[in-house]
Image (tube, rainbow, N blue to C red; front, side, top):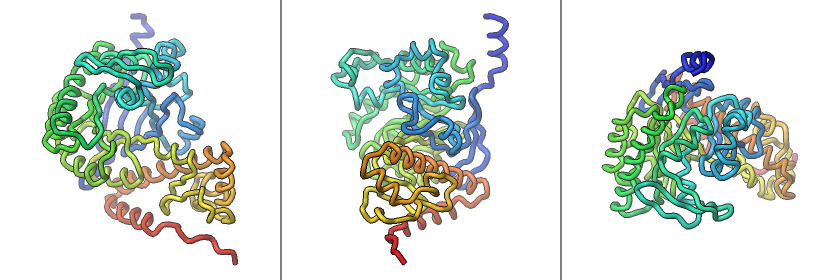
Length: 393
């Protein structure tokens, strides 16, 4: 090892999590990675293919995001993890100097790929792009994430759709536990802890309470830097998801971050924070923006609706985001109706701004011991909505 490399290794801060404040089960904390601090609870914008769709990286940062998510499955296919590594890693490749979390690719292998064959060793699958054959194992998933250089990496797991038979849920849960141990061994052999990176285990167990608890407890015996809850928001009602969180989070280590994967709506996030979750990711705000739907303090606003065609009001005149405060609903409606790219850009900007506004409000409320008050007031604002059409005077 060169003198410079030795010095870099010695000065790399280890991955850490600090719990700063609690109110009930709600938690306020701070994650430290080699690329900075992540304030929790945190919403992580999804940058599937090394970009948060319709947004500049600096815009995402300016909205308050400390971390974005990249996707192992998509990046391993195009442009390949090896190419990104040659170009200096994912941070440099996408122009994001802050924390990056990569998922394992497992969900996409199960949901997007063509013919696939699963064994104890891993999954052989066909690319949804061109049908080419690939193999993903716990070791290969961690290897790819290491090549990408992400700060937070995920174990490979098997995520099944709900509802499902108990026997199938238990089989997938047990397999995911065995894969967690293999993922951990690979992560340590690649020097992840020495680089200040973190590996998260994934709790499975579907909608079966005792399987969720068993998965959380056994995962907690592995020296992971964080733990996530997977296999929810995959078709089950919200009430089922929240019930699973209520029984799962108490069984998870208290001194490590907790990440609910693929969730969700603003209401999902608010209710999940109340049940002990620290991190979230979801394509919803960006996807909704590309399809004419805005998230605001007053609930959802569908800009495709003709009632907005002559409405001069902005989405939210008090918002610090120009997409919400500067442009009229009539203009946004027009952009959506004629399929102009600017419409998708402005509504994505608005949506991510609102999500980060919500997260900052949650963090402040926990800090100040008024989270429950904030939770109820926010739900009342959504319920009251902003449904009255504009009336010309």
